View 1 (tube, rainbow over the protein chains, first blue to last red):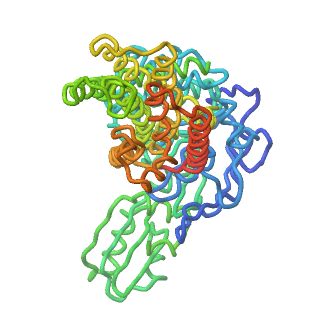
View 2: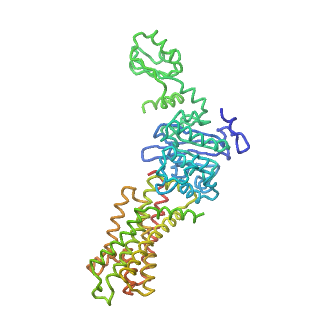
View 3: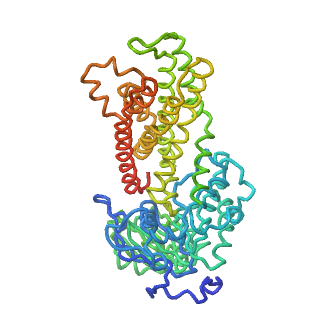
Length: 320
Length: 246
């Protein structure tokens, strides 16, 4: 959808993601990080082409932040490696190639907005002017304000200016809008547009499906430390359009349930039936006609978790 | 570019008025009260060294010690709000961080020394030779460097909540055992032996030695530099390892 609309500053079309090219903006291979028994990140491979805007989507605890930390060199992987434009995370950070907004990061209470961004700028080798970073983040008018006197949305945009001031080619944002309401979120992404329009690359972690759909070219789904799906926004949307139908159906069998119209997948435990439906209207009509004794029928939109399951057909995950 | 960073850090440290109040005004007030309590006589067993002078150098040193340590320890707050993680996404190296923060801590240590000394000179009429003044002010200032680094170490180990406990504890232990707050002459031998390995003992020696003219400067420099290196090593090591989310 967006690969043609986004101008690439690198003079070529973003290559297919399967090509592990040296020009990749982000390349993660076999990335693993365990904390004791917990496999926070359990073998992540990901290649992002320059100019792509990619959402790393998943529920809390999926391993998004750990992945981002390893990409930025904030923590070392147990195995595997991360590269940013072919460089180690450390070199990319030192060279100002990558800027990042970290999760739950805050600002200094005793500094003004201008000082905060200025301090980071003074450490980088080739920063953009502080005023320019503030303008791009939409906080130019707040330069002299103390960081304590900012609203939640303003704080995030100041943090965005902090990420921008090194004039990076890649921006990594870890749940940048988690503290914002819908309106502020929209404003935030508006200010991001100037960056992406220049053909730069963005990787953002989020657990908001709508945000991923709206602002990303490509969505990478993570769960339990792995990438379980990776596709265009359209692909994800088609999956998430489904519904889940649950009911008590005496005498139900998996083949019988799976053969109902509109059903993509069926799970039967005793009388309890859980149907993953592409067209729940067709399913319920057929169900009631065929099994008039069915009761406790409930239909609901797929949550994120079910969307993942539907996309991957990963049934073992259903118990989690 | 590094100078701009240092400048902003210094500006932040000096801006905190409550903190300055505590580290600058507190030793001055304590000095004036102590002089009123101990009187203006000479310390017994000395060749005419007045209490006013002894208290001046002791409280100046104490103020410097507190200011340096607190400034460093306040980095615990930066760590807990994730600011240090943001700094890791810049070319700033662990040693650069250490040097910048230690410099700011040392800078903040100067005002209490100067102010207590000014009160001593102008209000309590302390008379010292030029050399003794230099040692009492500049010497004590330089001797406060290890405490700026020790403060940083606390900042790297403590959280924003526990930092106060750490610094208060260290202040009491180092302040008393090192002989900044009470003279080591009153200690039993075994305690005085322990005292002599503490950095605060040598800080006190630099201060009080300016009056008695008996500082073993070489030894003081060695001990203070040694502690600085140890603390600095631990700070850098901890900074390198502690990149995870707090």
